[in-house]
Image 1 (cartoon, rainbow, N blue to C red):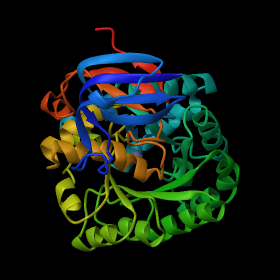
Image 2: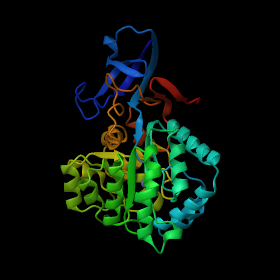
Image 3: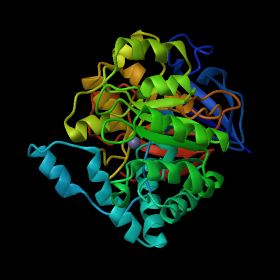
Image 4: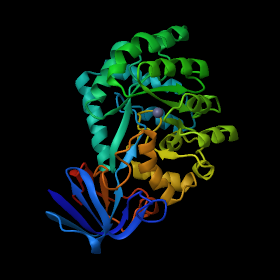
Length: 392
Ligand SMILES: [Zn+2]
């Protein structure tokens, strides 16, 4: 069964071989989907026949957004903390314990429902692939159940027992690090593709982070890292040293850090929702881009420092406040995310790739940042199947 999508005013393919420019953008375009994959892309005039046809009547299409950084397994609400912060109180990693306490007390059903609800929000914002982490259990049983629930919702699941040191270990951090890289990792590895550590001021230092990530790698997990969000430290250095797929946040970087990122395949994943919600300094995305670093944009959806599931919002902020062009921001939210997750099957609309795409109620992707806060997502399609359709 083949379906032809035609009448597309602007089609972002992310395939520079098809059309010049970063995004491989075609105008008056069409593509054909079969069995969940793209089997043909080109000009509407050249489109071959298909079993069925959908005429988009001048709307635009982009690859589904790839959200490579989210924390969806949690319970509780921290709106009061947000309000306090907006009234002048500073953000620190310590607030995470509020969510840990609520998560430990929640039932499996409550946690599962929370993940599902956030996932639906993501589809409504055009996200078709997302990663999610543990990190609000911080004991063997609660980290394990977080991951067992997460794997029901996505294949990109990350074990993050090293999010912060829980209350009960506050006087013995070394014992907690041993637990994470020992018994906790042993229990959690079968449910995880990735391992992540919060390597930052007030969280885990270089040596602790390195020991934990290396233990994860020895268990067959792929490393990624939260680095340089709160302060300039050695997180990016460690990311490059261990060949992490991605160093996430990258807010406070030295020139040396940028050089290191550019010299390797480590993606810099920027999370503008976090700076927005903590009223912190934004990373300079353009500086990273101009120095040859591969950049991804992700939501960092979490209840403390970035409670958004909206990739269009992140794109708009990246353009407005991080000096990205609309093209660079769109690429980073699609191909960049795919690279940060080392996924070859998503992030572009090309023959052989997943038919994961978003129909925008706009003449082109430029409207995402040009019309901030306006819902332009008409339909989200995953593997050829419509998963969300706007009824406006
Ligand atoms: Zn995070």
